[in-house]
Length: 429
Image 1 (tube, rainbow, N blue to C red):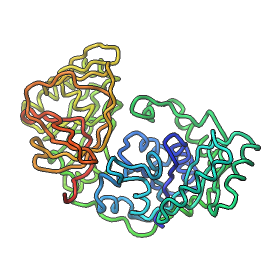
Image 2 (image 1 turned 180 degrees about the vertical axis):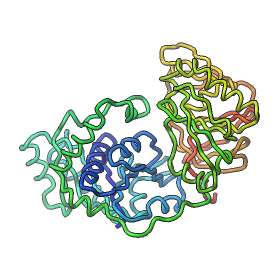
Image 3 (image 1 turned 135 degrees about the horizontal axis):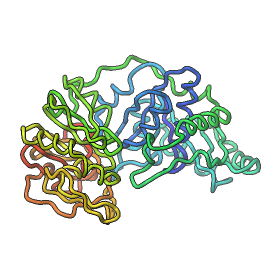
């Protein structure tokens, strides 16, 4: 086996808390553990990095080609990847589940079972997961949210006769909860007492789980592979990238790919009213939470001036999701207040009337910096487009099942953007 996947029957079972506690507990033992997150997630990886002090990479079995997954998983030392959703839940085309990732990378699976509303029926649930796909190696269970000694006895009775070890038994604990908002957890850097939470989670995992067994399951073999030179190309030779609480959503593998292709990168904070580096020949505004900071962004005169100069000088400017909203003319916040944005694209977006847009996308770039490329992407936002003016369209998109999504994004000269988060170049059709 080549690392450990922390999975669960469904979302909300406690995967994140268990993963964070395990990462911090192993780190406190002096073990240099590598964290990972399955699927298109920007938020959880920041928690993983805080837990163990190392960058967390995304492993997306639907959107990433095998060579991209392989370079990330290669290397020595423990690898702990947190799954998304349920173990066998995937995209609309029934592929890309955590189970498929486990088979692709040879990962051992530990199943975290939320027992808050279960007793003897836990046996039937676990038996189903053990037998559903014999090629998936479920190496152990962690029973989470156990209420009492009596509850524990009932769970053990329900699991009697199953040939899978119980590697942990975690009691219900209100201190193990993390605050959430519309796109998932609140950003790690915004939570007071995050270190205390990490240490408490590590204490709980250390006291209630077989840490030696989990460390053994996370071991991997082999050397780290070089970054493939076939990742999505950089916007330019020097890319200025917005980075703060409003623009926090970047994939490390894309940054690795840009560096491997020779691009320099610099970072600036629009919320601190910083401008992109004048020496950069391109600008990237990633996704994040501009809707929570619309007033500050609207008042950031230095940021606005720097972006206007970059646009006027012909530099490639590209925005994803929150970055796309910021490139527009107006952003309407949750209270209905209208805030002028950069005005570089003819676009008005609103967070006042929320509608969830969620799913994988295959996009064909019609114009802009990625013209002619087919790219796997993901869309997840609650804001809506109120108005789009005259401009070229950036992408033509279908969903994971091949259903037409339609034209997406805008291009005006050297400025472009859309709600799509780009992940990897698409393989052969």
